[in-house]
Length: 457
Length: 69
Image (cartoon, rainbow over the protein chains, first blue to last red):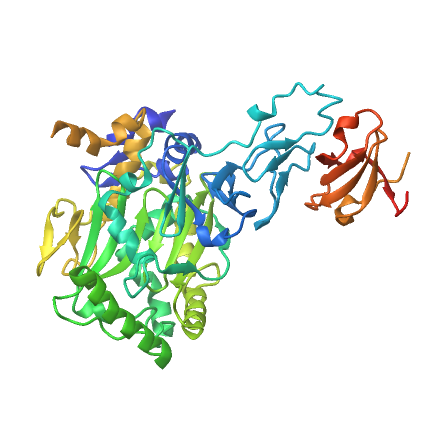
């Protein structure tokens, strides 16, 4: 194949030049390799514990292209199973969520307990003469499962590092989404249902956008003019931009990245949510509490980010987690979860629900702008001629900083300060740098480079 | 051939006759249309089954017994 024979680096992902081939977005063979080398080896977000509070509760989720069942068994233990009967592969669960004692395949009737064990086989005595070893034919279960502040993560590769090691220090940025706004540990919960919809583009288009593509703000000009924001202007409360350092933060060895706003020392967070006095007072109170609990770290206000490879974080306005599920090289299925403070008053939650759906999701005004860009960019990159020309990711190349610190607050990760530069593609490059490493590496022995460095010390 | 039975509607406590001549009482019904959980009441072929709880396959259920049958 032409594309892969050139090598991922520098042929397709040229970090030195800041150029990336369109092939990695549109090529069928690269896509198939991606499923194996990436999605079968990374940690993927599969849901939230609050979605399955009781024994027998389940939520049908996805890992790569494959349907999986997140469920709590009768004993209360949480599992993630491949949603495929071991007999002929039919989905054993075709609902989105619910509660059940068994998952029964509608094809031939094999039935599985919520612990994954095969418990029902039609004509077990008559046709199998009781010789089928049921213990060998349970649902396929993911070998690694991890829970973090309510979120549930799964990984098909038993040799992958544990989830918190996979995150590294990036966990502090994930906390900006998962902790209560008052700084309480894991004080968030899922609001409402999960929005799911399909868009005709490669999954990496939305993934790179949420890494911190601040360059595309012009696309949202119309939404800003409409003023869908929670204070009645813009699409978000953005006063912090006038006083904060704007940073792009990337973790080279892990592939995670985010934007953050870093407020000056001893300056209060600007007022927000001015459309409702109740909501405004709630968040003002939370900000005070957050400063008390988190100290200097509370000077950080979250901005879009991405846990490698396909889990998007949007920590503030709106506060959501999205998974970009691949559905072939030319289609992505978006699943978006919305979060609120579990302890917030009902009026605050209602206000946020209205704002969230105004902004995000298939009907959200801001996300519609994004989808239009991704869809047309993908379509216009599929052609024979178009594929010959790489994309440019050169913004800020060579201006990254390690050990970044401002007014006494050090920032973990490799940082690009874009306060004056306005924009960079530092975080986007990081996504593809790590992507290329996964596409080349034979095993996690090559990917967990931090372990090598630690051993050398 | 007997008429097919919609097992999704069978409530716990319902008594059923099975194709092998056994009878059972439904304990719970996952309403998947394929299986019910039932306690064996009688079994002409295997007395050891009596009293045990089993998953009963829909196609093995041949009749719904009314009270007293």
